[in-house]
Image (cartoon, rainbow, N blue to C red; front, side):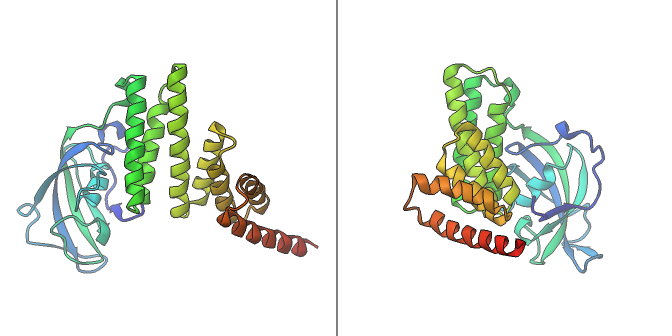
Amino acid sequence: GDGGVVALAPQANPNSRDKRPEDLSTVAVKYWVWGVVDDTRPSMVGGDPTDVSEQREFVVDDGAEGCAGLGWAAKDLEVGERRMFRMSRAYMPPGAATDEFVEVNVELIKVLKPAPNLQEMTNTAKVGYAERMRADGNKWFGEGNYERASRRYSSAVNAIAINQDYTAEEKRAVKQVGLLCFLNRAQCGLKLERWQEAKRDCVMARNIDSSNIKAAYRHAIACTHLKLWDEAKADLDKVLAAEPSNGGARREMQRVIRELKAQAHSDK
């Protein structure tokens, strides 16, 4: 995550990842909200933590109002485990005060419905699931939630990567979904200023379609932020050869040429 939810105690069984819920699991949690008096001294909102609690059932990482922080906490817990988490304002559950951050004691009561089991899906079902995750990612991207959009694109890619035993028709569908997801996840990386991740996703997209112009352009943008001017120029040359009137690419090319000239001058 982005640091908005931080566990204040270690996991009881750090090697039991498979026992914790994943994104899109339906869970029931109980939580106790603490207001923070200062950085070291939390105070209970409403009294004794054994008496004051709330219980919520929700789908993890599905955007339910007030459940963002609880979802991150649930993914870090086993059923029956309870630990304290510090949550920033954007992640606070209902009932929290308006502090910059609060501490919330969260217990995972039950996993009501686990996330889809990709291992048990047919190839056709995997491709369909990947398409749904891509569409969901597009929805979150359109709403400006680039973190969640990126996770959905990752879910799509992971689904179709599990089994390589595809028919020729299935391979075409897998390549198309994979290409779109890598391109879109690269765009999320650019929005989130994760330049290396964006660059890597563009490389993956170009491994599927070496002539893809969006992949070349987004790779160029990532390279400019990484100060890889020669790579950026090579990408932009390809973009402008295909789309001479691409204004964004022309502006980036002017910038890259200036940087290359400055670099050449400093090397003298």
